[in-house]
Image (cartoon, rainbow, N blue to C red; front, side, top):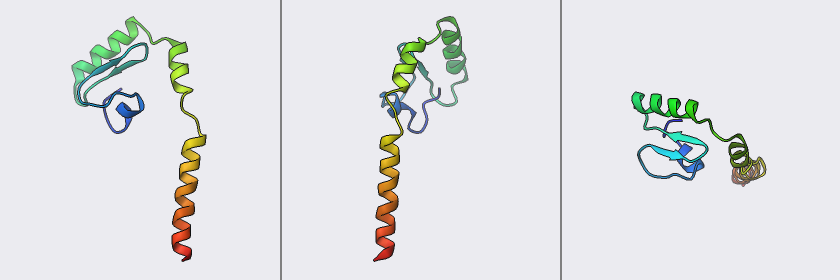
Length: 82
């Protein structure tokens, strides 16, 4: 994937520049066509480990984002009700 938005933070890789996430893939600098082509070629040659990808994805759930969104709406409604 490209190194944009919150993707580096989600992967736990803050800081600029391309970085390989061992067993998962590579972050590529936006606009680096050659870097993206290289990362894709590497991934095709050595696919990501499905069990590692799944384990990483399962770290994230719906509970925390839903609780945060619910709190945000409740706080906003409380301010309007005052």
